[in-house]
Length: 162
Length: 281
Image 1 (cartoon, each protein chain N blue to C red):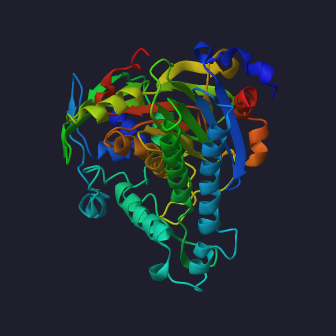
Image 2 (image 1 turned 120 degrees about the vertical axis):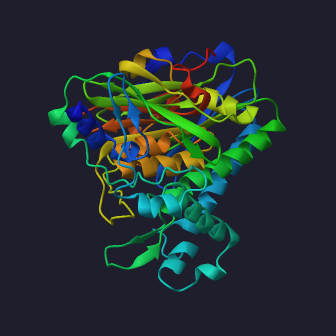
């Protein structure tokens, strides 16, 4: 269990610093803000609540890749108070690495936001999808230049409708 | 890539007229797609051309490559930020808000090669400018009929749908390891998708908190209601690396996809998006 936690922390130290994870067999309290919470939480991010610990200094996955045992499951953090209300995050772990982080408890907001949100859920395909087999209107990717555009899927789509 | 390759994806929605416009602005390909009546008419063309003109005007104002642009003049001390055009003030103000919201992972004040810290709002300007031009276009088109509109500015996308007889826009996220493949798809009627990474452009993204180039991820994609913020958050997520997961999950109305160097793909979703799949369109 200890190794699982170590792996998790290596992967997502920013997240671990914010939440405690409860498993069916064990409860591990996160070492709250032992490193970066001093600057962040207070300097604050009025719009996102106490997300401050994730300063981008996470130990990049090293622990997760080499020491991860085959631990899989879902872990739910404690609710965190934000300016919008309580937020609770659930993470899914497969083979010792985190594969998703979802807010399971979320403050109610006005209907318009919910509508936007309802649409803003990417459907992750289990395997990469061949672009040509899917109906696609737009392709989002790391900024492509005019040169790269010529070979891009977006340029082929654009061409078809010009 | 030939267009034949994507032919199966090009089924027009219910035979509704559709048209794409493409221009190169800010060094980027910018595509605007319209679905609606008279998309080949002059009025529609004028509305689209105005959007491109606004983007070119912002490029003239904010470009760091144009040595006499107002922002270049501020950077080398010929002018001061205090005396700058209101649009530059607005951007500077937004950059400050972005720094707070990203807890320092985004900043317009970065040390440059010579060690000097100069104003560089580039990381925010593109998304902001595209969002503004896009909103203006949506408004102008309303005078002409019901339109669905999409803009793709070098990989960052905004969509809007005023029609009720059309499917949502289908937006794919490129696989940073193989640009002919897509990792994820989402159905969006109104909203934005931005992706940050270094693969396509080969340029470095710097962590403002450390001053060092970051290389934690292959790409970070953020979905949300507004392109300006999706773009800023995608950049910040790329800078934060895996630590972005906990941060993103707490931002209202946004979702994300992070791709690691080992090919691991992690999704982050928030809000009513607790439902695991998109609503049936």
